[in-house]
Image (cartoon, rainbow, N blue to C red; front, side, top):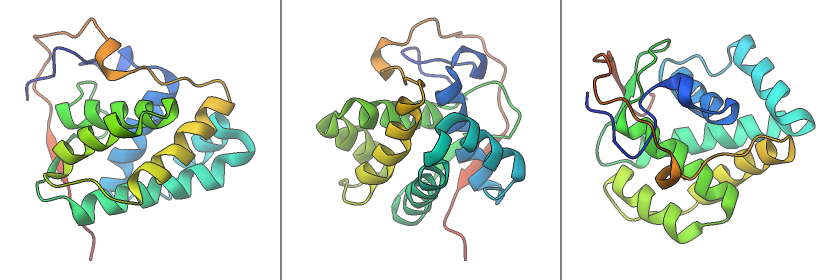
Length: 163
């Protein structure tokens, strides 16, 4: 796996909100989105909007798995190295938090391998705004620096639609 030089290559370089987005995506792919620890972290990060934020995140992840024309590459849960796709997902939530819908749609089109369509922006925006209302600002992808080029190779998993 080659991390993107424009984004963080290490989970420890992320803010709490960005870490939660990656963690939730990996948990979704592993079938553990109902994990009590993850539910508690959404509550801690999003306050009274936790249920709405988590539900919106689940919609986002389900649609990503169902509508993507290419597999989304994720590192294994617990891996400190971020994949390029995980970096892009962080950027999508940052775009949604900043109201940058055109940039969001361009990034999403790359990630999906097809044109973006609803409900992606709306779902990401609910989660991102809940994080923002609780003091968790997400960094814009292009503004993140300090990537480590020699990060260890991560185990890969692929986000796919569940039967």
